[in-house]
Length: 210
Ligand SMILES: Nc1ncnc2c1ncn2[C@@H]1O[C@H](COP(=O)(O)OP(=O)(O)OP(=O)(O)O)[C@@H](O)[C@H]1O
Image (cartoon, rainbow, N blue to C red; front, top):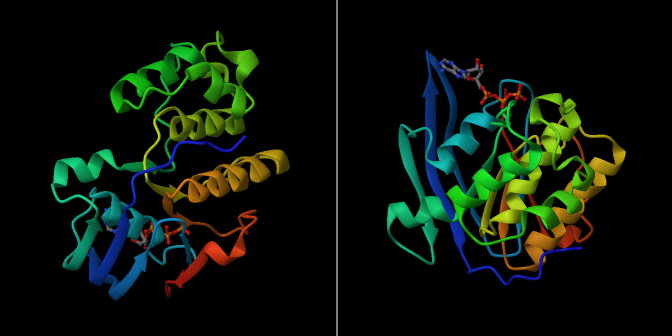
């Protein structure tokens, strides 16, 4: 079931963004705006710079030129609190139970969502007491997705969100994104696959070159 929380309205505006890694200029003069209820899909071949761009948006990498502005609030610390970054690494503590892992993220990120409900939603309800180290790759990805639900935030930055997931998992990601956008959130997702987003009118695309 999609989240019912109405998220605070944020707009993500990027202009003139350029990033160099090593000797290579990965991208130059990238600009776009993502409004509440919209998702921007980042496309491009391996090595084009999709992950790097998402890390710039998350504030993990500093661009060489240009700006990333989140409107709706001004202070940088608050901006971080508006963002969920779902990267390649799932940041799961193998010796802790599945429920404990998510409980820690819920406590760190705040938001007050139910750990049990989030695990149920991503199909891990029965695995609450399993050591997280025993999860399969797809289940670990589902646990990472549950973090998006337990602490509602208006900006989702998703790097290959369907990685390691089965067909039902692909559908789940589409449904979670649909719910997020319907709640007034926005998203940027790097993906090589078609995301199963129902409302295609909310999708915008940006192609990065190799
Ligand atoms: N720390 C670094 N130093 C130098 N080059 C780097 C560094 N990190 C990444 N790169 C290079 O930057 C380029 C872009 O990497 P990035 O991970 O952003 O691409 P991507 O479009 O996400 O690729 P993929 O589709 O394979 O996930 C690659 O050529 C990579 O080798």
